[in-house]
Length: 92
Image 1 (cartoon, rainbow, N blue to C red):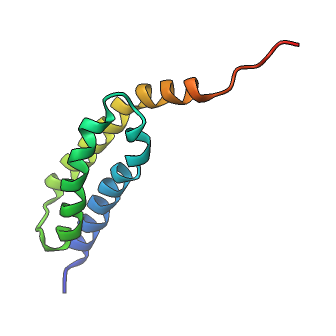
Image 2 (cartoon, rainbow, N blue to C red):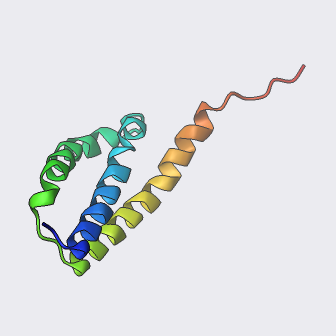
């Protein structure tokens, strides 16, 4: 049975990976998003096997930082995409 530290690491890593995977449909709509989608298969595969990987606190912190940085990088392109989708107001 895994110790509480291992379970905590597993939960944190799973949360990071799932957060990224949840963006898949939005990334499909971005101009260069398809290039990232190839990596999603790797993430999905890793997520399926994550419970068999030993993770240290530093591993988890590194992945959390990378996830945060990735999400920050996507803020502008995703915001631009949403802004273009909003219907403009028509003057009458």
